Length: 122
Image (cartoon, rainbow, N blue to C red; front, side, top):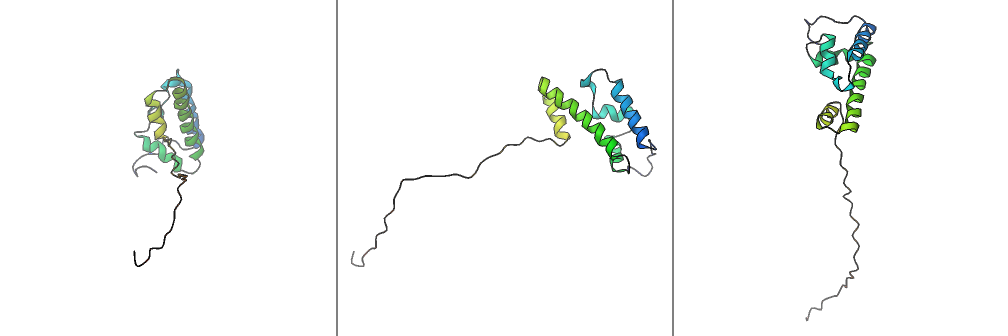
C-alpha cells in the first residue's frame, strides 16, 4: 500500500470509517462534499494514498462506500443544476457519455434485374 515510507494512518477499518463519518457530519452543504475534501480531512497527502486503502484487507467496503456517497452528491447536484463540473467529476468516478448508433441499414429497392445472354455474333 502506498509508498514504503508512508505510515499507516488508520490501524482499523472502523477507525477510518469513524473519521469518514466525521467528515460527512462536518460538511454543512452537500455541494461542499468532495473527494479531495475527504482526502485532506483524513490527513492523506494524495488521493492515491486514500485509494490504496481500498486494496488493504478489511478496508475495501469503507473506501467504496465513502466514494459512493461522494458520487451520489455529484449525481444529485447534476440533476438539480446540470453543471459541467459535476459531469466531469462523475466521469472521474467511471461514468461516461454513451452514444449508440444503429449501423445496420435495411435498404429496400424495387429494382428488377434481367440477365441476358449475349450472343457471340452480336
